[in-house]
Length: 191
Length: 107
Image (spheres, helix red, strand yellow):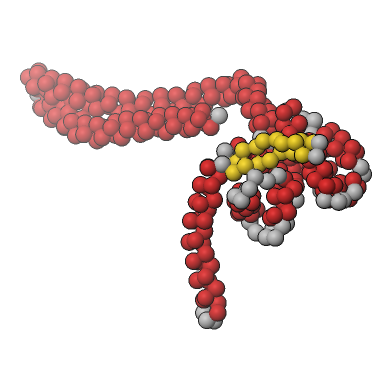
C-alpha cells in the first residue's frame, strides 16, 4: 500500500469526524509517514510501520467524544418524548391506585371514630333517659341507665386506642407520600 | 498492566520526553522506545489529551519543505511531572517492601 492509498483509506473511515479534527488527524499521520521516510525508509516500508487503517480509525473514533455524546442525548430526549404519553398514563393509574388505598384506610379510621362517637352518644342518651324510664316503667329504667353508662364507658375507653391508631395512620400516610415523592424525584434527576 | 494505569504512565512519559527540548511525534516515539514501545496511534490521543489539559502547547515549523508540528512542555505540564514523581515515591516504597518480603521467604 502506498502513502496515498493509506491516507485516503484512513480519511474515508474518519469522515464522521468534525472537519477540524479530521484535518489534524490526517496531518499527524502524513507527518508520521514523512518522518519515517526521512529516517531512510521507503514509502511502502513507512506505511507498513503504521497499524492497519481499520484499527487506527477505530481507535480514533473511539476517542472522539462529541458526536456519540450528542447523539446519545438527542436519542434519550426523543425516547422520553415519545414515551411520555404512556408514562403519563401509567403514572396516573398508579396515582389512582394510591389514592384509593389512602381512601380505604382513612375510611376505616373514620368508621372507628364513628363507633366511638355512637357508643358515647348512645350510651349517654341511654344513661340520661334511664331515670326517666324508671319513673314510668320501673326497674327496667335503672337497667337502661346502667347499660347506658357501661356503653358510654366503653366508648370513652376506646378514645385513646382510636387516637393512637389515627396517629399511626397519619404518620404512615405522610411517610408513604414522602417516599413516593423521593422515588419520583430521583427518576427526574436521573433524566 | 492495567490499561488506565498504562495510559496515565505513558502521558507522563510523553511529557518527560519534552522536558529537555521541544519534540515532534516520531521523535517522541523514538525517545520513549528505550523504556516502552508505543505505536503512533497510541501516541496521538495522548498528545490530544495533554494538549486539551494544557500540559503542552503545539506549534508548526517548516522542515525540509513541509510543515512539522512541534510540542512544547508548559508549566502545567511540568507541575504534572512533579506531582507524578511525588506520588510514585510512595509507590516505590511499597514495591521495595514487597520485594524485601519475598526475599526473606515471608508470605
